[in-house]
Image (cartoon, rainbow, N blue to C red; front, side, top):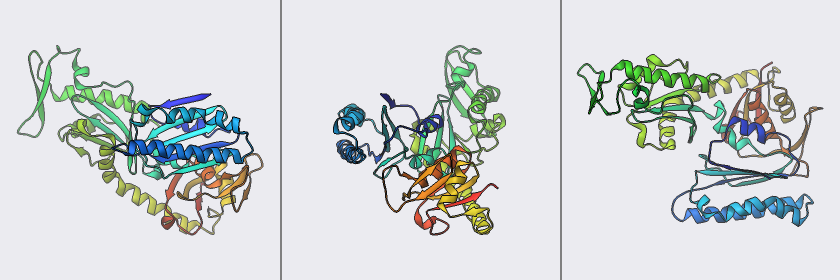
Length: 385
């Protein structure tokens, strides 16, 4: 049994693994997990009810009761783990199939959803990964700590930032003995950092070296990224960081103040205010391009055509209704897509298939409410060629 108790972040490799073909059936569970007060117990009740729905779905596929109980057994164990339910994020995603039970505590308050399909349903996870969801990064820096967060609209999670100093003190510890440091602005607006005990005064050059080491770690982690990066820190640090920074998509508007006391979602909300205008502009440009291209062969709202094109990496921009499922079947070898009027055995949500394939092939996915879709279809695409 492949059981992953995910305290760490959900990575792109995790998504790639979940997207692999599985032995059917596959159960995907999404639920909100408010983590204060009486909601803690309600979360357990909610998960119990969703396991019951999953049981009904599995029995409906023809599995025996004993097979279903064996498949859901890790979920029942998790249900009884009271300490687990006391430590939640905003949402829980769980994936169950033969020999597989994975669950992730995530900063997205998912609507309740249980889906049984030939594949795991992954569309709700894409805002954590795809630029169409408004993805960005936050570098939160102080004298004591350095944190890197990945954010999207309404959520943010902390990443592991490797090969970087954890603090300014770690950067200068080989140059100076161990002392405490405090900062004092000068009249000219720059800062020198005065020590007490046996610390020597810290100069701009010390801070610049600190940021250069942070930048080196960022280069390794973000070398293929194009998402905006927002700096969070006290005002006098941002100009020095800009000198050290080599990431091309640094946002000019920083989050001002000491970020040490801020939770990830607080930093994410402040960063979103800085990057939202950028994404709103990109979205409107994409909508305009779609409307110009529809009818030319370079855009489509036909699900059968789009799913096949997404599988081939032809979709550059995809607009998909976040709150809908369109049941159908897709054969990756023949590229044949069949749209069904309702869920049947062997069916999958072809909207989910198109979204995941577009993302995995480097396209941009916009998960939208029905009122924001460019036309009445639940799926619309702009092709690369």
